[in-house]
Image (cartoon, rainbow, N blue to C red; front, side, top):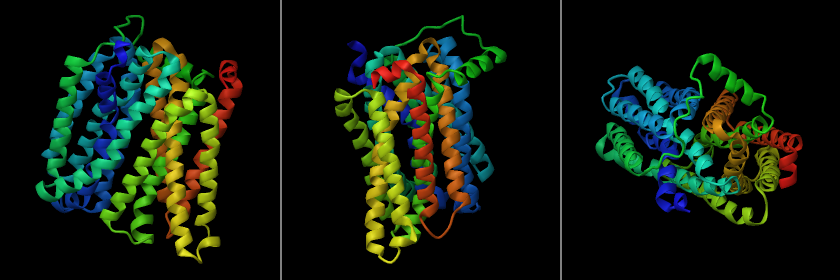
Amino acid sequence: MKTRRPSLLFILGALSAIGPFSIDMYLPGIPQIAKSLNTDLVRVGYSLTSYFIGISVGQLIYGPLTDRFGRKKPLLFGLTFYILASLGCVFALDIYTLVGLRVLQALGGCVGMIIGRAIVRDLFDPSQTAKIFSLLMLMIGVAPVIAPTVGGMVAASLGWQALFVILTLFGIFLWIVVYFFLPESKGPDTSVSLKLQKIFARYVSLFKNQDFLPFALASAALSSGLYAYIAGSPFIYMEIFGFNEREYGWIYAVNALGMISGSQLNHLLLKKWSSVKVSLILAYLQVLCGGFLVLFTSSLFSFNPVIFKISFFILVFLFLTTHGILSPNTSALAINPMGAVAGTASSLMGFIQMVFGSLATAIVSFFHSASAMPMAQVMIGFALLGTLFLWFGVKKSPQRNQNF
């Protein structure tokens, strides 16, 4: 099929990777930003929080727009917004300006995540969407592997402003590629109203939709362990285990490769089983990994640091690998039945994911202690919650039971 050509998948993957690149690339420059703008690391950290806020809000905006005007026009608008905000970050003279511009940058950049999922729903048969999402995760997973390394080298040699120059150029590249090479997958639909009352009513209807909400909640909860890992791993690996920044970067890359490997293993699993069965089995495995992670993090194994470290490395790697398999399947289960409102559904699912992810990072930070236990407990807690949502969704949907 023409729509399955590699160029289309490359474009969709690159659009989906805007978020990870925009987050991970600038992380190594945070100390330099703090020094340059005469502030502290805590305030610079607000620029990461503001980016998550922008993503959450932006996803609710673009869904109705893309259902009303088609996929391409809102996509080009969002990318233009992203380019201008990224360029503004280059010239930020104080931390408050940078924090505000990061909100705008996220409002523009999140369009790729939303519309990428909707385009997959438009162009591919429902039986193929989980496999396509797995391919897109390959590109999304590359970002955490290369972005921090590239960001560290660029910040060290050219300064932190050069990081945002690169993001600006990345946005320009994507705008050109989308304009000239991305086919429109869904034309304008004048029946889709943009009145706030109508938009609100569509979101309310999705919250009542048993074919959507349980799987969107499951996808969000089962993804939240990743956010807990992002929040807790720097302290654990560098402060508790004593690794330096470069060694932590390598550990981060290895775990990212686990997620990539999981997303590609999903291809093989889907040849034998349905997305429903793969999701349930991997959700149980994620809970199992989380349970052992809490066990080996407890005081029972504190007497042997070697066992503690080895078990911690392996269990975190396996936990994140299950995420790589679960994410494309739970996303497909939520989006596939949505039809004409796939864009709005994709927005709401992304919003729920960001709310859950932000909650996971906040809990890890709030219960921060001189141990790895808060991160481990949050990881298994959300894994259990996601598994319950998934189980409930399958039981409430006869069609999903047949696919099992």
